[in-house]
Image (tube, rainbow, N blue to C red):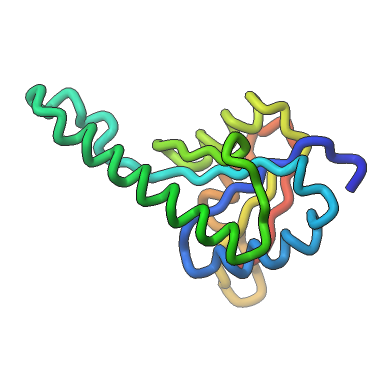
Length: 147
């Protein structure tokens, strides 16, 4: 663990997140001060904001979704024993793999930890789409945890 000074834990808010967090907690328990957490809201209407007609309805909806995700993320972190300060928890909107890689670069993360919803095709287990995209072209080491 001493090889990694800055870790980025990317989680979604699916039921599998508890499993991921319980496994990662064992790995990072003594180094919580090095962990940053990111959750990316898949926002299909980010680019549609221009068609809002100036009403601000889409911006208000984005804020509501971000606030709701923030509460859910805080609850799941606390429930799984993560004591992470608010300045190390990031919620972004966009395409998950892109935002995870961008934040990893910005933080100069040594290790990015992602949950992998594996595609089980018999003898060949393939990582999920987001995990696979995170693996492509990232500077950091990546740990994919099967969930």
